[in-house]
Amino acid sequence: MIKFQEGNNQFNFRSVALIIKENHVLIQKDLKDDFWALPGGRVEFFENSSDTVVREIFEELGWKVQLVRPVWFIENFFQIGITNFHETATLYLMEILGNTEYQSNIEFRGLEDHLIFKWADISKLNEINLKPKELKSKLKNLPSQVEFLSLDHN
Image 1 (cartoon, one colour):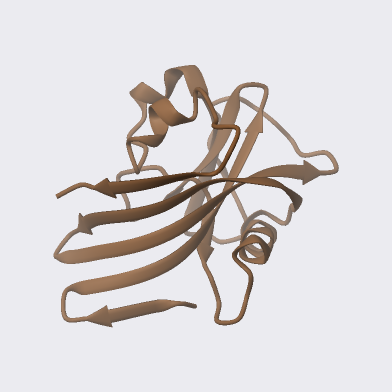
Image 2 (cartoon, one colour; image 1 turned 180 degrees about the horizontal axis):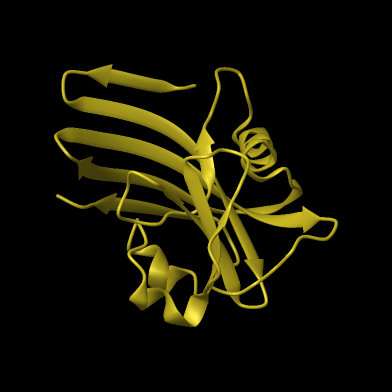
């Protein structure tokens, strides 16, 4: 995975799935965290970021997905505990292949024990601690072309 750490500073290259169903977006939470995020994971060396998100969704949920289109490229600066993060992320609109169970706002486990998922109503994202928080408003009106977002939470 593409991750570099130097002291309290860490760089990540992450790929993220934006999966929307009936005006609900799939979000995930690690058991150790107090916030939700869009699902995805770190890109491996010499792996296309679009392949990363397909792989991550399969590893975490066992679902097959396909790329619809890229939506955002995000450069994100934030802190968790004493670690300062510099993260670049590609966010792709994805489509689930086949049928999956869907229940609004019901938490469920995937294949990795440390992750919880749920389908969150996009119109009620202000009630959820979603990171990065700027996505709460951005998800209500997806851009027609790829947008670059620079987010600094310090």
